[in-house]
Length: 288
Image 1 (tube, rainbow, N blue to C red):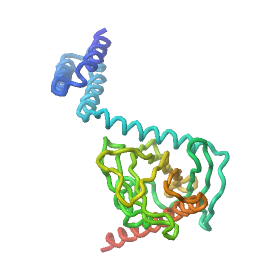
Image 2: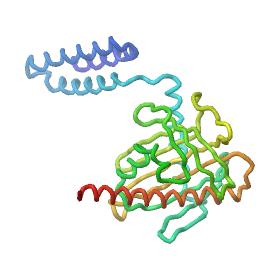
Image 3: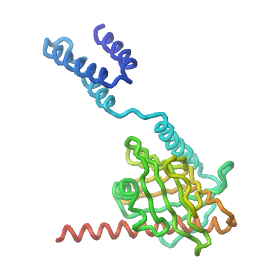
Image 4: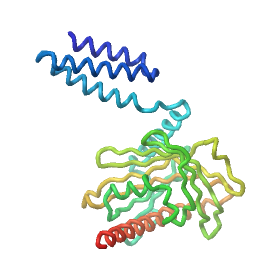
């Protein structure tokens, strides 16, 4: 009866104090001290006390997290929605048309979807462990302009929690300068589930980054990258990149389709070179 009563009171109390920072911290500390006294009082309640202490500790860590504002929560929801839509598109295996197949097995496919238009899908296997690729694409995303000539700059405008960021990306001219400078403001969401990583995003609005003079503000999304260990070799990683972009401006669809499919193929080559160069540099430093 006592454990059930405690859980009920703790649940009711949490609803009332979740938005009262000082009070909720005091309450968690008091609960922890009371649990300590009960644990040493005798053998009776020690088992459930330990269980509730663990839950109280978890609650304490969650209460320390900074609550999201209404605007921040809207960005988080946008990122999660982009991930959901992207994964739904990738799960549908029918209707994909081959655009490019390289000698090393890299390939780009495309598909026309209602309300979205033409989307592209890159499928490659990289001779790199998943964690290394995740670090390059997520933790060091602002360095992408150093190794991908199709990207001039990526800048993180705001971080929201552990999984969501707002970014501004400036793309280089493409298609023999037929496609002029474009930029994007995006919300990006990254999630890890077991051995699979998903990086998703879509265009958004951010007051501190209005449209730039002389640059066309393009739109992307839903888009995502999925990283998972190769089924044939767990030291390799299969990367699938879903790309959906509206470049805006007056461009023939034939040029857009060619540019986007080639951009994905170029990305795979540049990423492979980047990871190989980085690995060789690390080996040289270890030898020294």
